[in-house]
Amino acid sequence: MAQGDGDKRKKPNILITGTPGTGKTTTASALSEATQLRHINIGDLVKEKNLHDGWDDQFDCYIINEDLVCDELEDIMEEGGNIVDYHGCDFFPERWFDRVVVLQTDNSALYDRLSKRGYSETKISNNMECEIFQVLLEEAKESYPEGIVVALRSDSIDDITNNIATLTHWLTTWQAAP
Image (cartoon, rainbow, N blue to C red; front, side, top):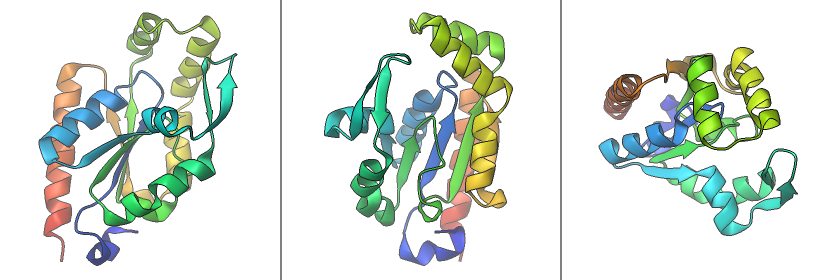
């Protein structure tokens, strides 16, 4: 549902995506607090509702069942007013989002963040490659209309603060659209 279809929703839906460690959850939580939109962390939802097909020992994470996740979210997303936080974006229906934000982080900062989380070298390497090759930005650009995808830096607290201000302003603009 694009901005022009906003008459079906009173509030927009925002997807915040990016490589693990880029600040998705921090940004989504702060944006939710600033705007009163509902924050949906897909990783937490998958765990809480068992929306997975088991555990991946190599990457130390659940193997999400994308169909179950989409079924679980369908009604909530149609209502609008959601900030979805996940490191992938290509399986969500295009109509769900009015803004897709891809967070990007400097490689040295990202490495430090992932190391502090206790990620294995394999998992760190995989995520670093995704960031270096801008895999998630390309995935977003291929999955959503060009006008709704935006890449934002997320190297520091100042960047996150600026991103919240940018997205809050966008939200005000979206609400004011005829």
